[in-house]
Length: 202
Image 1 (tube, rainbow, N blue to C red):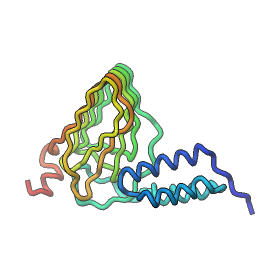
Image 2 (tube, rainbow, N blue to C red):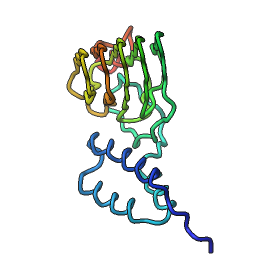
Image 3 (cartoon, rainbow, N blue to C red):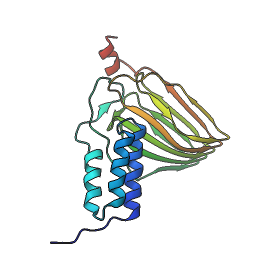
Image 4 (cartoon, helix red, strand yellow):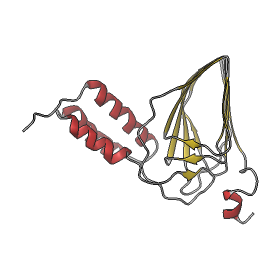
């Protein structure tokens, strides 16, 4: 029988950070988190961490439209580790695009425009980790998509206009740090006769 492979501290820390996001999203209780952490930091078998990761972060359902409330979705996928970076440029996402469970943006002297009204969410909670300096950021969400601001800001303006969460609608969490930047989040109806209007009878 092969001996178990001990996990690295980096593996434990990464899993702990991801599970902490689930606690913040209300998908994991503090008691459950503490119990799992006892296992994460005591096990000498990396396979145990893989089992925990598979249980809480494996996604098996189709993407869900941001503007469509009332949908039941599976737990979020593991975060994407590939950041989207821009220096003195522009990041723009509009129309029909897929929003991963976790996105990382790094901006310096840049502008970013994210329109989620026709986007597809791969997770019930989508986290935008933003690290920006001297940049302008605008995020547009449809009604019912709640936006939680956890940004740390320094010499910046942050204006988040959000609505109450609709049952089953995805939620957006803003994390990271912005310096000398402006962040604006606005709620607007989906463009054209989209899914939201059809559901609401508009």
